[in-house]
Length: 333
Image 1 (spheres, rainbow, N blue to C red):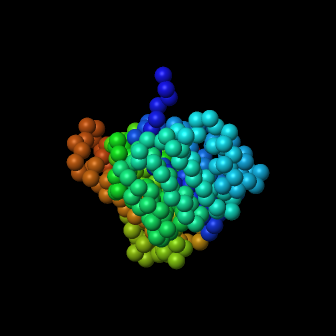
Image 2 (spheres, rainbow, N blue to C red):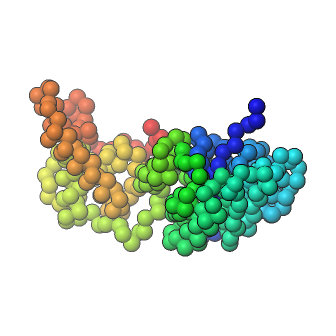
Image 3 (cartoon, rainbow, N blue to C red):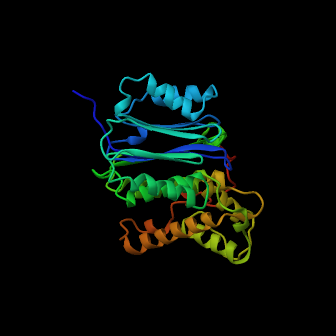
């Protein structure tokens, strides 16, 4: 039995400003993120698709690691592969040079477009407008490589994308020390393995990942924790059970301790600051969670008296909700 073919559109890219290399991809294929994208910080990125040759990923990165150009990597991988006519490949190297290959037997429509620092490729597409729109979106979108890669996927889908439909999508971007706790180069690795609208779901998951794991907000937007901002934080922390003091707008030690515990329990260590300021995204997230808690208490009939009076941050066993925070340690749970 012949191995399955799957229609895919992808983009490989390098952003010199963030020193990042990445791949974004969508396909009518289960868990496309497990097959197509490969990236390594300081080395490059590879997308292998159509009748995908999975060895193109590690072998391509190995060649890039030796200093081979994107064009040379494409030439060497495909020339050594007897099945190249059914393959599609996109590569961007350490210097941002890009190259792509579309085999003559890839299912229509199949093709690619190469630009400055990126390459778009796709097969079993609605037409050439798909990769053309991806390229224009990547070139024109404001923001860093993450914003631009996601914009390319959205634009490709708007032009019809994979003509068989949608199923999975992935975003993989490597940046030196960009991973969790700075312990790896895997800056972003988010996937949607099976969904009716995988690109929109990927964007939703990425927004949560961005909020929790990344630090891409403009420092000029930082808010000083005082006055109305402090009072709003105290209120929302109180609704959630983290704070039990007065709503006086004074950012005192109990308020700071309550906020630190909230930050730790919600995996926002990456957004914690020691200079008396807070990111607007954290204020908005806390406000949203407090509103959800109010809605829960309003609409849920209590089974146990007083059960709805305690927010999720209330200390178990009646302990102090504003106890000093424990030493900060990275956590993934």
